[in-house]
Image (cartoon, rainbow, N blue to C red; front, side, top):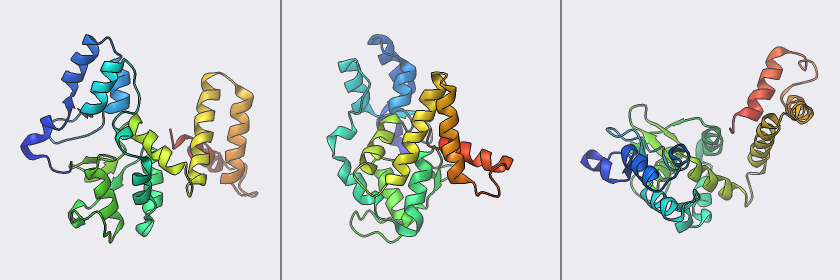
Length: 217
């Protein structure tokens, strides 16, 4: 997953292949892209999870198929190894950010971890994270994998992050439905948490409140 050499086009479906499959099975390509795209390889910038794409076409429904082959507890074990700031990094990844990773420190040992980069590199090898070799950054590739991270966080230890995710999702839904009162309450709640009494009316404080709610989206 980190260095595919000459095999990258065979590690999954390429974007033209998925387009053809969506046309053949009358499925929405943009939805398929949202659910299963995201693995950035050197020559092929869009590689799709083949297991999930096949199941989606066969069942005519977008859902979590690849991640259902293993329980989320396996992911949670690695997420809870909070080496030198691993937890904040995962929180940033869930917000759509990227994390710089040194993949060369990993020795293909799934038991002994020395630093945060070892855990992130393992998650890249397992497919839970995508990896951009040009920038040496890891990221969560698609909607299917985001759902798996959220499942792993729901069983304890990540309550604060889950609260922010839920608040962000509610703010988005209220905005799309034009519910101005609910949007105002959501922003006010985030504003109360993000700003001190002295800086409550400061423009930067409101900006931080909005950012607090938008990040997980």
